[in-house]
Length: 442
Ligand code: PLP
Image (cartoon, rainbow, N blue to C red; front, side):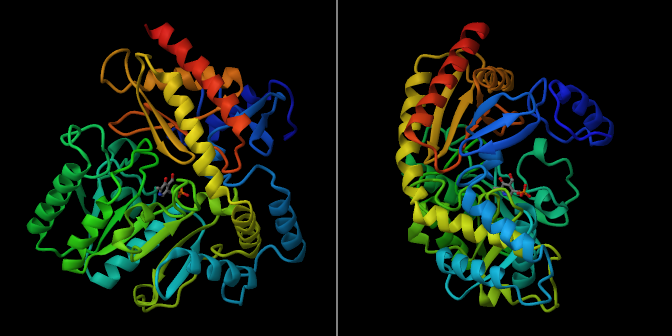
């Protein structure tokens, strides 16, 4: 069977896809596209159409598509050896671990590499439950932490979590969604107070026999919602009283994406670093790298010898090291802050007065546009899908997500090297798409 890309082949590929892939595998667009190559902040489909990529793959292209520095590092490593295993010493793995340990802020840090965010969170849950000898986990409502049996079991939204047969007992607390729900009308301080009281109440019911709280500093799949700065610091004080560990899921928020901070937890810095942080997505710029950082005492609580066969594979580590070099040398965190700030302003202005937009929110290069049925408060997955299609027509790719059993939030998370001109161009296309859908839905 030919694997060549020919004009119009996406429809045929879709048929083959449907014949062999699971029905629950998410696909964007009424007519799904095949992306064949990329460069910088752009990608091309099999028919030669060029798109500005405002979703960075899926927050996986952290610096840029086809970044020459990463491609060179990968091909040089691939030319030497693709994979051995962590049963042998692995120089690129040790080098990346040293750098991530130093950047993490966690004292006496140890790093374990996995191949995905799910596996990273799974490992963090394994460590926390072993260390604390408890299978109870606290998670935020509206959270998403991956799709293994454990990670999906703690995911606070049934539409992303198709099983309730989790091996863990999960207790959900408020704090994830700021602008909807029972505490929506509260100011920052009152919100923090109410959520902390909820946490204390929950712990009162369990007697404090809980292994860990896992939280995304900005909820990603949940629709780019952030709690007020300081919420996790207030939680941390309560958790400390009970010896409960804090796991910061930085799969979407790590590496400077939020602009102000290198890690999302730093918006709550009064708390000090978390006991564990998990990472994935952007660090490999598309190569499969995930991992957990924890202090030595927690990391070393597992009695068994263990490896991840592909975690820390030298070719992925070479990508991670080259990608991290580029990120730091070009201050892409600063770029995320500056260009992200401009983009948010521009999107707010573009959405003003539109009945289908409820809110534009975000941090750095993580912007969410919440779509609603016109002039109501009802989340609108159909409006979000229509905007996605209209933006594609205009040459722009964005993501969607959002809790409350819908995908009603447009998610914008371009590579962190986005230029001001590209931000302007993307905002213009999106403004046009939003206006078109606003008019269409009335
Ligand atoms: N944690 C967060 C916050 C995520 O957004 C995701 C994926 O979207 C995961 C974990 C799971 O990562 P992966 O899809 O690499 O397994």
